[in-house]
Image (cartoon, helix red, strand yellow):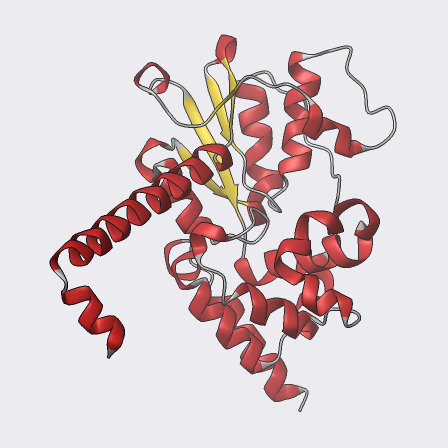
Length: 259
């Protein structure tokens, strides 16, 4: 009540409006700055091709293919993560002069992508990658191992604009990048069929398999119906736009048959 009366004082009312106005400006600026730094296009000018990086969707393998193509003397010295340190020709948005390029990316089943992220970050490469995730999961990590259910529950509460690149909804990410700019949005499930065509057309090295979490082998066992429902709601546009509803139905059937 007191605060309400104070706001009625003309000079304070104006001050309150100004504070709200400038807070909104700062917030919008930070969000835009955040996204400018998040979008990653790798451009190869002499071949008129641009690859949009989508994390946990074979991006390490595709980067290695590109690196070996444009830097013939480059080799994986210690481990494949070194490819992420290469200074590719990167841009953060598609400009007019790039409209005649072949612009492509890959998307993945969001249910399997989350299992892959969980296994990679908390088990397979825990020592290497965990620092990147402490911002989101630090409280749970202090209390012991993070279960997959906890992992999903936390992720599903994070606004899309603040999600880490490894679990951000793909439709949201590609929409920010500009869906209408893409020549092809391909599915990871068909990469063994589609990437050889791209490699041959643009003189890229064949795709090799790196940083695999083997999530495709056992992903169903990670999901209860409750957890799957959370993912279905959070990633509903991925599921609808890229046609992955069948995975949700597989989870339902798996839980019915095993309970």
